[in-house]
Figure (spheres, rainbow, N blue to C red):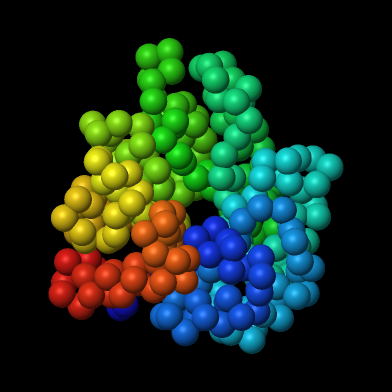
Length: 258
């Protein structure tokens, strides 16, 4: 069974702002089958559904600001995502006061559980997307541990490249075994200790072991979508996501990833 690849639309944010329909048609033509939206709603749900139907793309998630799952907004978020057929509500980051100490993190985990329960009533799931800070130590443990040791139905959308910004010794593979069946979608982003995000999949300075990464996903999780996020300026946004999927498909054909 071939790997299902999606693209995080933040990768083509400039193109998307100029031309929603044209950009999504281009994304589909490059070989992606899914897209992940981000941010507040800039279009009606009906318009998003129409362009998804037109292109055949699947909405695999929406990076949803925390304020959009607050009690006064969550029903609007649920209704919108129901219309477009999205089940994954992904929180892409949090206000500092929700994460800056152990007590705050434990309260955030409790809030996550409550939102996850609410979404489950409507057939939806909550997930959290990491950056580098979640792999730093706060009061004796990693932030990521506080959040996921104290939640149960909350998915972890691991961003392996982001995690490595915490430092060269960051173990980006440990969460895949520590939290089995919590990774439903994953962000893949090549990373260089020397050049940061300014590298491409499989380049000599890309430090991520992609074979190991995909193997752990396959063995410990039911990953629905592998999401590419292109976050550098080596190439234009469209060219960047094209080169990314070509490199990943080549790895798949060669048996490096499966």
